Length: 428
Image (cartoon, rainbow, N blue to C red; front, side, top):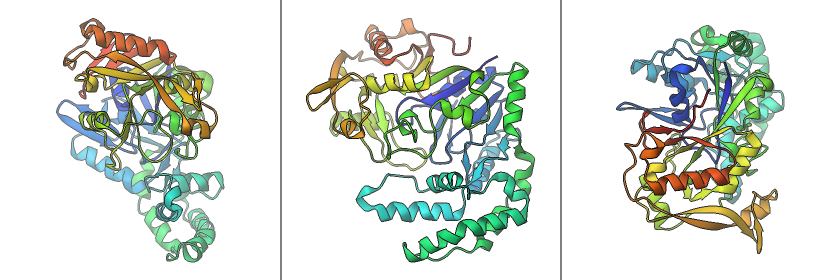
């Protein structure tokens, strides 16, 4: 049975939870391999809506073992808050596994994230202020706190004191903030130890053994391709690898175990935070997409920037991730439009670019070249086969498929878990 990676093909918020939910009972493990609580998945189950930030959306599927692996940075307060909220709604969270090698977000990470962003002024990146970047920076600087450190108080204290040696100087002398006591941090982290202990495991070993047994493992990426720290619109990116390659390093599962890469792409484009966005709309069309698609951040509540579908970005995502299948979401949001523009290339200083420019400066100045498609002007939320879609909707999907670099295997036509049209099986 396969190891499957799900990634976002744009700037996030594409509806990755819907794809995870689609695979449902055919999955044995669902693994979050990057990021932290700086992104959100909204999953609708019947009349119930669940907003998840740190937990993999597979936790909502009965029988699935959810895993938070080593590539994730974990805010323990958020972790237990989400678990308690799900338990209160009758969701079984007892199978959750947490990697002993995952890094912990502390109070000083959150503080530094907020004060640093404010200090940047007009050069702000647009972080969520949840400490994700500083936690990853500590990981790379080898002064991070890992989950396993919480079970040895002496090691934990040494690491916290070492990390705060420099950070307190920064807080006091650069940002004019109070110093943070190591005792404050240690006591806070130790307060989670006993609740955390039953969840902690060698998740890389457990996932390897699951694949050896022939079980199906789904790797669920946070954020998306254009926010990847290496391959996204740097520096306006997240602090982890949100592309398919991150599934291997972020989980400890070898890359040759991965059978399929499913990329989620919205029928239009959105992003949050600062950074280039060639198809961004500032007119009534943008307001329509934002309102009809309810484009507000699951984590922050911020209005998302919106624009038309960008085919060069989809092709880029297909190439970087090795995409085998696209899942196209929110096609129903376009139901009322007379015409639907699609960006097919860019104009950069009079030169046509079929692909995403490697130069950030060129990408910043890129102007979209559009091709327009006729709308279908009818409700598609009840469609369950491709043939049931209006002819113009079918033509739109087929045109996107031809210009996006891989087949479109499923199409979201509404917010419900069953509101999806499947063209090709995502596992077989």
